[in-house]
Image (cartoon, rainbow, N blue to C red):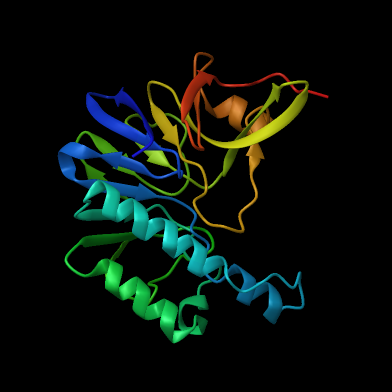
Length: 224
């Protein structure tokens, strides 16, 4: 399991290369912004015609992380579905796949701005969740502490071998973690954006996802 281990408010956590967060002591896997059904929603409104395989790809990676970690609890940090009613529009195969992954696990859906109401699929649906010492919600709140959230889809832009690359990343400071988007068809907000620079402390770190997760100072300077 490729991961970067770190401690956040006395909780020993693992940032996985996939963009999931694992809390071994709780056997808890956290994922954010799955955006199940994005290709279906875009197709229905006449948007970009994307290959309709995003949900399957996301579920494949999620299943692999669940097997690798042995997680018995799962928290989905909001925007798990790309629209409030998209769950009922997913193919039956994908709905059954989600149900199978939920079997034998405590599964919590945190509400997001794309899916503010109950999702109609098994599991518990809540606005936010306190699991001492941490609190889980979709959008970071000013002044919060011990907070893990998603929503912003953070990405770090940095030079590599003479060119610029962009990698989804976790943003971490002493008060909060902002998680990367886990879904296949999700874009991202650069860490040098005003929103993220204003949210994160000056000494914040970015944990890059990918084959070898690595922690670097959060990139804040705009690169050409």
